[in-house]
Image: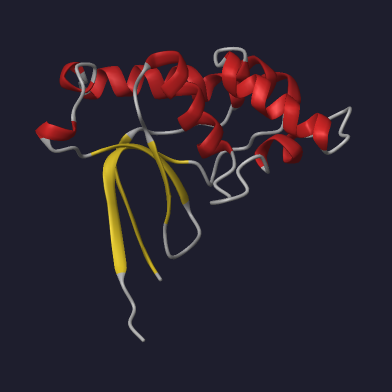
Length: 145
């Protein structure tokens, strides 16, 4: 039996100290991503949830359980064409980040990305779902299994 660690590095923020407590703000976030909104509404309907709570929306990610980070990754990818990463560290802290990429992994949009652009995009969508203060900078998540 062996144990392997992994490290995710990028430019973004930790979401753990932020509060997400408004169904209306989550619905507004999802309006930027019609395909995701349609998929989540289908899941809620299949579970016979007619008045979803914040927790219902945040539990959409059954695989990784990254909650709001998963929603933000999917919304930003559909709305902006930029792929962010959600990652969790040993302490259960969840991060939203633009990961380091090798040149051959980059699409045309990635080649135009700057720190300022990531700050603008992440801030735009975070401000929709939280009033909590946040900082965007270089982050890393170390975990293993």
